[in-house]
Structures are given as structure tokens and as C-alpha cells.
Image (tube, rainbow, N blue to C red; front, side, top):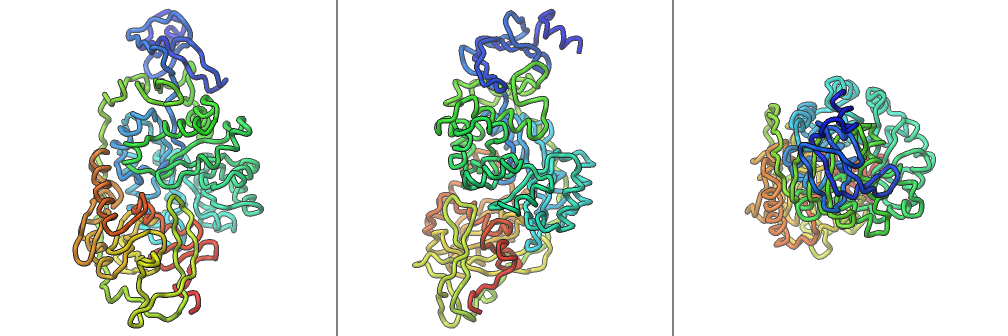
Length: 571
């Protein structure tokens, strides 16, 4: 402390002095022209005349705090935490609040332990949330159920900093003892939420639990109501579900709300990271939409730091961590240099410091999985009106459609002319062999099938296609590889991206993972698929806690209608 004080007073040289920068002050929302002095991992002084062992001339560029992602699922990138960290730090991100409920569904507590151990010593600080909904609802089948004792254990071991999104909002609102037990087990930490279309008196009940944020708002009025009831609003801008532009007007109309709002990612792909960006792209979008640049910056720095109680970061001030990013200007948010804890990790926009690699923990041995036969997938025409999952590009919400069944030889069949595909979910964690069959409209597939082990949130195997043989072939390829993404037509596998880490992540580097996903999506387009991100769209068709109709291994689920639904609307 005496050395820090001496460096702050200028009585001894700092380790690093950044001169000639336009310093972004997110406390007062102004720029300052001064130097920033760093000693060890801390900012010790702002002003003029500091001497340093190393002096960097910023050349008039803008110095900003390291950016913070307030809600992200690292597994959704299909990258392991070390590879993810190296990808986002070049975009100016130095802290992420990660929810590992994907791998918790696939591998239980061992999965959370893996995420914790593999997130240590990286170029980015990774703070985990304790998964609160494994399973997300009683209608999903994960590897193991994580109850209140498991939540307590995750905090006791020091793995987690907050309670991850509480998705079972009906359980919260109706006083389900299991859900409330997890909330109570979390104690005095931030309780993050997930409450799509929860408003009015239901929102009162949800907020009563102490849940203090939500990232599922799809319109300004919903976001404003949640702000008025004391929740922080996370404005999501991910690869497939961008809500930031829609919600941003509430901050433009009342900039003081930036103190209670933040831009977050949720789900993102490796390709999006490489080609579009991470938190930097959110800053660009907010400025393009007319938000004051410093207000936009606050929403990815100080606001998330305040919400999560991270008092040592989020701004540039004495005593805070030296997580510093030099950008050409805020409008472009083009990253030149990044210092993490005072150590240079990015120069000239390129990574210069290799991240530490943690030793993976042993995973449970996978259970044998046998795909169903084409005959088992047959759907007898016991009704005339089908319930169908309606999916749209860029929307996480689905619709419950009722469509006339296409019948051939007494069996309900897919209909490419109506964009009506068959969808199958196969349980993969417990060896039950259980599967369920439904129908989906909107994927744009004309023939063949797609399959994935990334199937939120339980991450069983899911496949959608236009004929049973192709669906079985795609599922069989996942059974053989242990997990991944697959494209099949007839008895031929057109392509596979293997995901050996829990069926969710690859050991490839980011560029290789993005390239392989590109190649696989190109093969999907040969089947007539029109969606930009078909595998991500497919992965969300099993998430039972998002309205409306979904398919899990237990059957059709519509959380807004109380749970399990029949395949035929008229049966």
C-alpha cells in the first residue's frame, strides 16, 4: 500500500503511464485530457507529470475502462473458456458474467467445476452464476437435477458470484418450494432473472423474490415496467436474438436510466465474435441509434459493475483495477491496446499474451445412446389438426400453430411445400431411450435433416427434417460422436462438427470453429435451409420456459398453457 500511495503521489515512478489519451469518464460522462498512471494491477493516478518505467503515447486515442458483459453463455460460442477469453479480449472485453447452465444441464456439478477451473488465469475475468434452473422446468431431462443443496455447494466452493437467471418464472410466482429453496440458498448475492412477458401482478410476485434483473424484454413498455418495479434491464444483443435497438429508445428518452440498464450478449457464435464483435459492437449500435457515446459506454462498464457489486472495476479512477482499453474513438470502438490488471495483452489489435490453460476435470463416462428407427418415428394420423411450433428468424419466442395434418398411408408426414418439418428430441443423458416427436414450421428446410446436441436447456439430441431416414441418420451420427452438429440426407452424413466437451464445446481455436460451422451451414443450405443461423434456431426449440410451443424428450410443452400439450389439437 505504501508503494501504491507513493506512486499515486508521484513520489516514485509508476509501472505504466498512458499519455496523450482522451480519457472517458463514465462517472461524470465527460472526456478528460490527462495521463493515467498504473502501479501493479491498479490505477494509482490521473493527472499530469507522472513518470513511469513504461510510457505509452496514446496519440489522442480514447482510453476507456475494460468492458463487461453482464450475461453470456460461453458454451453457446462452442468455444472453451480459454479460447473464448482470447477472442473477446481483443474486442476490449475484460470481464464477463457467465451463466454455465448449459454445461450444468449436460454434465451436472462436474460441468460447473470444469467451467470454474478452466476460467482461472485467463486474459478475461470470468465470474460464474450458480445455475438456478437445472432442469429449466419439470418438462426437461438434464444429466442430473441441481437443487438447493447443489446451489449452496457451488457458493461454498467459491465457484460462483451470483445466482444465474431464474428461468422458472411460474415456479417463482406460484411459490414452488424447490425454486424458492434455490433462491434462499443463494443468500445475499445478485439474483439474475429471466421473465419473458411477465408483467402486472405476476411481475410483482417475481420481483418479491428479490430477483433484480431481466434480459428477456422484447419491447420498450415491458422494459419500462420492469424498471419501474425495481429490476435492472439487460438489453440483449446476441447472434440470433437482437433486442438492443428495440429497447434503446427508453434510454434515449431518459438517459438517467443508463444507470439501471446494460447491454449484454446472452448467446453468441464464434463466427459472430470473429466477424462482428462482442461488447464493442454493442457500443457501436447504441451510438448509431443516437445514444450519447459516453452513456453507451457506461452501459457496458459502470452499470454492470454496479449491478454485480464489482467495486474494483467499471471506470478509470484511482484504486480500481487497471483494466484499460485504447480505442480509436467510441463511434468505431476499434480496439488498439488492452491492458488487463496493468499487463499488456493486446497491441495493435492483436493478442500478444497467451492465456493460461486450466487442466480439464474428468467428465462422467457417457451412457450408450441408441437412436430410434424410422418406423418408431412414424406418427399415426389420429387427428386432423396438428399443433406445430412456429419459428421466425431472429426471434427466441415461438408461436403455437394449428395446421391441417399432411397424411400419407395413414401416417402424418412432413410437407416441404408448407415448410412443415418433423422434429425429434432424443434423451441422451440417462440412457432411457425416450424420445418425442413434433412438427415445426419456419426452418425453411426442403429435404434431409439437421441435428444437434446443443438443445437448450437440457441439451438432449434434437433433429428436424423432411423424412424419417434422414432424421435417424443425423441422430445416429451424434450418438456415434458423443455430441455435435450434423447434416444428413437419406443414409448419408453430409457433415459433422464434433463437440467433445459435454456435447457443447469444441477444442478448436475460434477461427477453426467458425470455419467448420460455416462449412456445415453451407451444407445445410444445400438442403434448402434459408435461416441465417439454422443450428442456433434449432437449439432453442427445446427450451420449455420460453413461450410458446416447444418440444422436449417428454413431448410438446407450452409454459403459457400449463405444460405438456398433445400433438393433435383435435384428438
